[in-house]
Length: 126
Image (tube, rainbow, N blue to C red):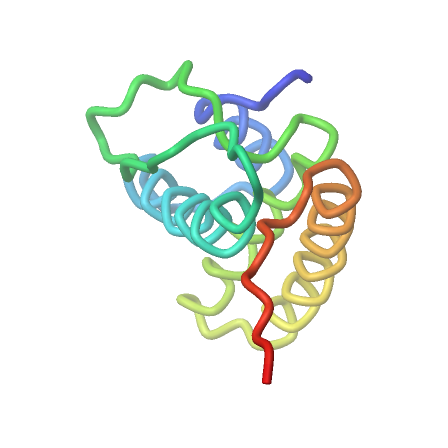
């Protein structure tokens, strides 16, 4: 499955939403989202495709593949958009981007749940 790269995500966002934030700021935000995805989605599955996550920073290769597949790339766009709108105190833009981010994230999460088996937990007998 094709994955979106760090540079592709940032370039796509900059095309859709011109902004004054640095590439480093956007890289840190994407890293925050991918860490959340790793901890709350990927690690909770049997035989996860990756066993650890290391944060992205200004030294991270722009060709590094992100965790969400290309078909859900809007998740990154709207996460960046909502984060930047919040920083700029643009409440209406923040609310709109938050709703769209949640919708795209839910689509990704639903797909991931359908295609990856959840870890078995021990049953408790009484």
